[in-house]
Length: 460
Image 1 (cartoon, one colour):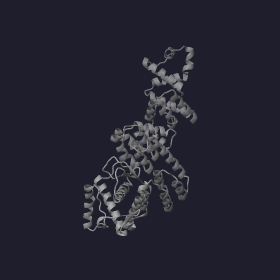
Image 2 (cartoon, one colour; image 1 turned 120 degrees about the horizontal axis):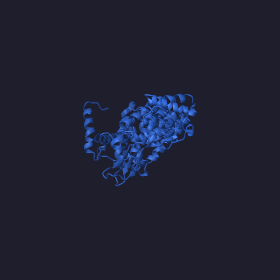
Image 3 (spheres, helix red, strand yellow; image 1 turned 60 degrees about the vertical axis):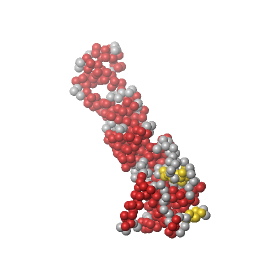
Image 4 (spheres, one colour; image 1 turned 30 degrees about the horizontal axis):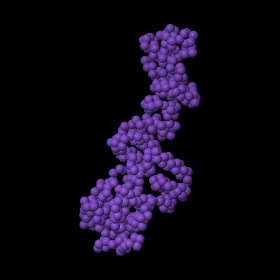
């Protein structure tokens, strides 16, 4: 049954229902279509008139119509079915019976992108969820358009349902980015971002996609990429993934990844390599921007931090821990920047992986050193949680960062007796460094906890 036949049958059926008649006369047909008797055959066939009578006699017109469609589709080739469905959609015929009878939902879902909003909504309604998700997970032709439509219409619970039903990290990421794009920051804060953190992130296994979702939340903030740039980076990352999947050995993958400039992509793609030597090749390829005035300080800070972990952890300083430390040290930018808080010496951006030192006032060399190591502590403590918007408990986090800087510097002093940077020797009272930051209250927390452990001889 084509679109023309269906529309004629439906028009005649509805006309007879209005008349409350089940027997169709010639006069009824002419009045229904406002035509002469000789024109009837060009409007509706005798077979369709008989079928209309069956519909009028039926207790379930809808079921009978679906059955008729199914019988007709059974006699058609796939191309004929697709063309037939396309004709209905072109004429904006959206009756459920037309689509319920289709043997494969892809026949109409493939045309989803070209439909208007109302038609799209009906197609989603007509398609059972299992079939819809199978179409998406099977990389159906209109998959991206369907995901965008679902993202624009879902509430929090629906968003979670869709995210748990689709399998691709890319598709999950696009779902949440489309859901939050072009909405006010207040709406995101109140509704969608908690969903991202609590529901979606555990479902996304690819580190790069997680980072893009986080960056999207901050896209209105200075220094963060725009939504357009975020989408562009995602497509670039997908291109890299496709290329890497073609390589059969880790060395080829490592050589390819080492040439990628985007540090988030490089770090995420490292998971595709197992060989230790090849992984190290990638880690060595990280580059960072360091203000020339801070270059020597940063180089020393890295050396002192490495020595601290080697000396304190010993055999517990495993290869995976070394890797994570090296990634943070080798990729994190260190630069001067005007900070909003005038009382703040430095700030660590654990999403963009950079340390910002206040450019508003001069500090002693020892203060600069403590600040850099303090900020590295923040980056290290958040290495596994860069997609959570809030730092760990502020008091404990800041206190631990101050304590970390003390331990690192004093460990170095104990081994080397003095610290010399660019010919200048940094001296401390009693040959020991004690933090003099403004985090007095914050420092009390970790020191109190560690003091108790020290008395029980449980600090190693």
